[in-house]
Image (cartoon, rainbow, N blue to C red; front, side, top):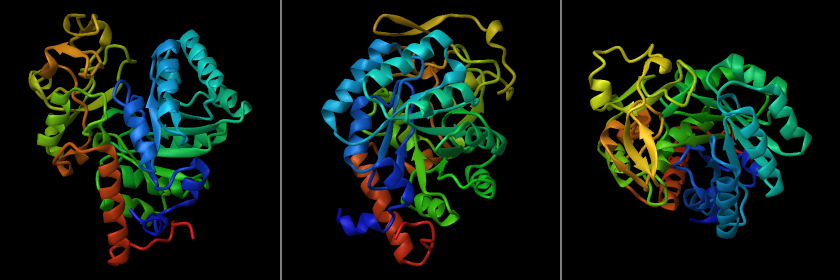
Length: 345
């Protein structure tokens, strides 16, 4: 794609992050490994390696593979509020030893953790689900706010639509804002930029790519699904705090809930192994999704997908996904369906 075309949607955030186009890869645990992150970076986007609760050893392996595959910048995604304190400390130490200069956080804002990252001179991108959490992230020193709407796949922290939440936060902050949740196309990107955001973050759109570490069955379920095939539930809550809801494609587990999708207590759920990942047990009701290395009852596992799944009709490379989104967004601007008021000149 011509450089001039990409410049049409280049925003100030792109300059801050060192990417060409305002498309971020969500740090999906298990799925956003180095192969996908490198593909997104090499295609001009800004990726986050999904290292939620992973060991320092795996972080080192993934980061080194990433650094060998691309010389472009990226972030490491961690979730401080859902990670044991000792492990989180070891993760951050490992990241700094490897030269990581950007971190992507999610869930509750922990000011001490943000301050630690900022004291080392690194960037903090903080994903939030409410305007109040956005203010807490800004007060703690975050550099970028990611507004995640209820349409998003995977763990969902808030209950407001992505664009409504983004507009509310934009009225309260001067920080660069990224819209996340239900965005799979260039039209969604154009709409976010028109709103005043400086980028979008995509998860489901990149899960359904050749490079993602998701199982082929999961990718195909995303392709086959429509947005209304997804449900928000906290039945898949083992390994996370009580009440942590996720958006998944409905399956045999959610079908048995009789419409009671929320309000499940992880302490009352059994630990029955239904799948295995490199010999490690994966329990029914856990948050573990099926990966390339997973065997067992894949259908009963959480197959994460956002409401934008209905706009994804095939599995392609991450580079193709980005090219399609950029081309469509630029066409939208050129065709007069949106203005480019937030685009850097």
